[in-house]
Image (cartoon, rainbow, N blue to C red; front, side, top):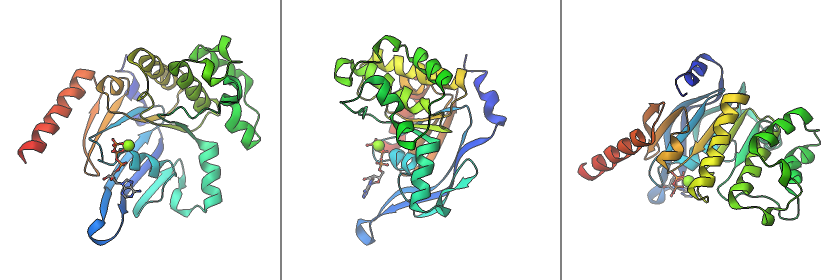
Length: 256
Ligand SMILES: Nc1ncnc2c1ncn2[C@@H]1O[C@H](COP(=O)(O)OP(=O)(O)OP(=O)(O)O)[C@@H](O)[C@H]1O
Ligand SMILES: [Mg+2]
């Protein structure tokens, strides 16, 4: 049920962008990738970011995740204002507080599924919480594949490993840039189901960029970007509703 999920809206903000702008280049070649964007990502909420190619989706996600610098405005992750951090502190914050799922699964081929899942914590010198790890592994349904290497797994299974890797360290927020972009619809649905479960059952916060209305319908809300600005928001999205909204934008784009 999606109707219960937004009860979370009264809860704390996991990440916030305020008046966030990002400008690439100078003079005539200048591109305004983000134009004073303000948005909250609340704890325990699943947000999809949609919009045409070049509208600033990846830029927004990268700036909020501390992967990219911004030109003006501010980004807060939990209580931390990103612009106050030095490079080393930013690296540490990304490592400890943020999980990433990329379109290319980015698993290390020489490591087993389990080793890939615990790698970020191994690098950080942290011991995984065994009970939590078991819960995550049982949720993604790969208990019998933990000794396999990525090449011995299907695309969907590899992406489930990547989801488990993002969840394993209990990050404050997980960002995915088209995490189902390389998957067939069945594997994609599986991965999206696990992401949604992680929000519903584990209280995870997830922000996902997607082009696919069906993928967006797994989220609690969708924000729509165009030309570096947030132009619309939809709560409890359905695939058809999202598709209609996208068509309306296209029609507007052609007539204006
Ligand atoms: N390194 C860069 N240098 C110059 N311009 C850039 C750079 N990265 C992105 N841009 C520009 O910023 C704008 C937003 O790019 P962004 O990658 O955020 O779009 P997107 O919405 O993620 O698109 P897509 O759906 O194609 O992934 C685009 O016009 C893009 O050309
Ligand atoms: Mg992108």
